[in-house]
Image: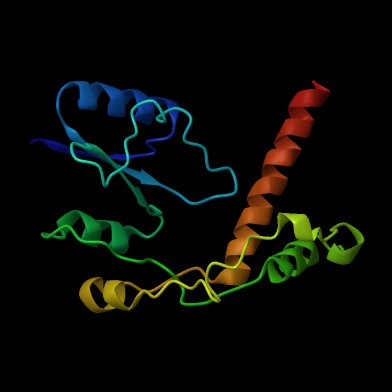
Length: 169
């Protein structure tokens, strides 16, 4: 079976290309970036759980800014599952503190805790262990928590500024 790798698979062009290649019998691998505006609406109609028999659309989280990792992913001979994580854990409180500090605001003036929205405790600690990815691929996380928050806040600010400019036209 022919295989294809599509970066930007959730965008307009990437989603059309994925649909076309799937219709031609390809196995399609799509690279999606984790972000605050993650959307899969354009590919939801062709997506199938990768654990089901016959699934031919497989999504991978990645960032093209990490070219070394992407090349290693492309040349990996044996498919396998890897956890790409920092081996750190952070609370929603820490995320709010860091986010609002980036904006020069006190998060406690804007955020209200409502215990009705707490997730039932399934496990005591959720943390990704990237040891296998490090051992087999030489992968190391390049973006840590504070930098990730900065990237997310800056991207949202840029989008908000753009939307405000468009609205004022």
